[in-house]
Image 1 (cartoon, rainbow, N blue to C red):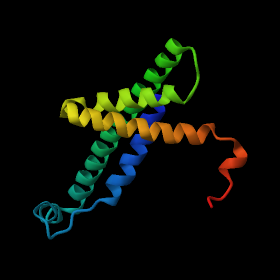
Image 2: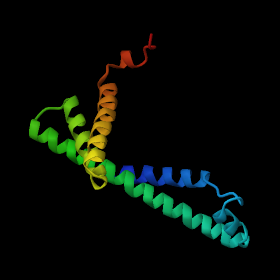
Image 3: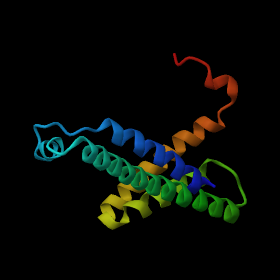
Amino acid sequence: MSGVMGAGLGGMFGLFMSSMRYDTPLTPQGAEIASLPIRQQLRQGLREMGRASYSSAKNFGMVGAIFSGTECCIEGFRAKNDLYNGVAAGCITGGALAAKAGPQAAAVGCAGFAAFSAAIDYYMRMPEDEKSRPIA
């Protein structure tokens, strides 16, 4: 379910981000696009929006599926539901996604995704009355 919802969110995000990008006539690619008839410009723009949407959907879906599957497996093995499950799943997910770039990138991905997972999980486990309290 997390992979499917992540893919849907990623598709919408990719569609939005590709619609915000534009090529000006000052760049070679922008000049090439501007010289085309309007119908071809629209067709090329829609094709690019579809590619960006699909790519983003695929990436978000993969991250959601890997993270939730890993967290579920860790929780099953440990038989506990605590903050460490999310941190470990984040580390494994970040390391796995960055593994192709080498061991240093995998270590940075592991640390970054684990820290992000810890922050989100900590906030989600916080009591409701503390979430709305202003930071002093």
